[in-house]
Length: 370
Ligand SMILES: NC(=O)c1ccc[n+]([C@@H]2O[C@H](COP(=O)([O-])OP(=O)(O)OC[C@H]3O[C@@H](n4cnc5c(N)ncnc54)[C@H](O)[C@@H]3O)[C@@H](O)[C@H]2O)c1
Ligand SMILES: [Zn+2]
Ligand SMILES: [Zn+2]
Image 1 (tube, protein in one colour):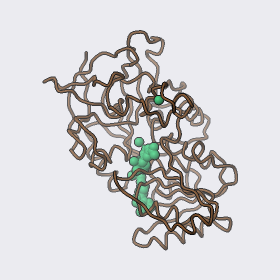
Image 2: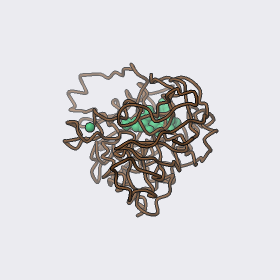
Image 3: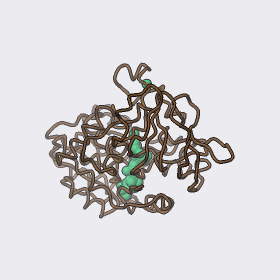
Image 4: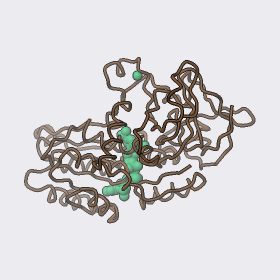
């Protein structure tokens, strides 16, 4: 048992309160991780703002890195002291999807209960109230007990803030391109929405050898950032005039049209745009997540007639134990400029301010440094 400091919301839609909590020791199958960095992803904001209904109280955060401080009974202690990135979908390794290698679709993960491997929380308030940890890793806290299958050791030399981003934004965006869509050298790609996830799609498109990479956002600053990491064309979106945005994307894509368009916002209007810009044979890859219950629509006849496709991409089809070290090595080799996405570092108590900036769209990726 030890004391930690964590960013707690009482329930979805409630403001963040920084609290001192009690953290129990790890059980078999769990590890104690001291957090070193935690990214602020729009999925955290969906929870904070009540777009997604989740129970609480819960310690926020699902993108993080740390150092293993202790392991539960029966686990190999040689991992103690190692720098790690955390997966927000600790695979159960037993369900049918895990068994067939599709861990990003695991149905038996403790993450869905936002608690330890046995489904009970390791955190509590001084009065004994149990406190959940978001997706079982609750990275916006000084330390957590997490499922061992969420822990991925990082190669030497990877900065904590880079490891944190590999835990969500990078794996989600890069993986959507190289794993889910399997973009090939010479393909033409557009990315709508250039937050941490969309910029990672751009990095993934560069890594995959895409010939043209059309970046689309309402912010000129983000378009410039995308250009500096390899986007070849920029389209300043005008939400008031979707037709103009669609024309702009089509023009930037050139004669051959787009092979793939990645929607990295989670807005029905931009989902519709992603489908509308597709030429025959093109594929829309939906990465952004909407509020629960939202629907999007498209005109069916040309979609079918043109053999177009729509696919959803969860966690960039990540198998964390394999893909996290690969993304880290690509960073070290200079092929994934992950550090370029980070435009603000903050302390845990500044989290509400960080959410304000994310809501306003004025930041790329913010990272809490512990
Ligand atoms: N599929 C997954 O597994 C997965 C994983 C992580 C995050 N997500 C989701 O991905 C989405 C993006 O996350 P993020 O952290 O990068 O968010 P973010 O808020 O940092 O980025 C969104 C970007 O979209 C831009 N934008 C907003 N409205 C626009 C419009 N009408 N046209 C063009 N651009 C517009 C903003 O300027 C911003 O740059 C969120 O919905 C998040 O929940 C999905
Ligand atoms: Zn995320
Ligand atoms: Zn599973």
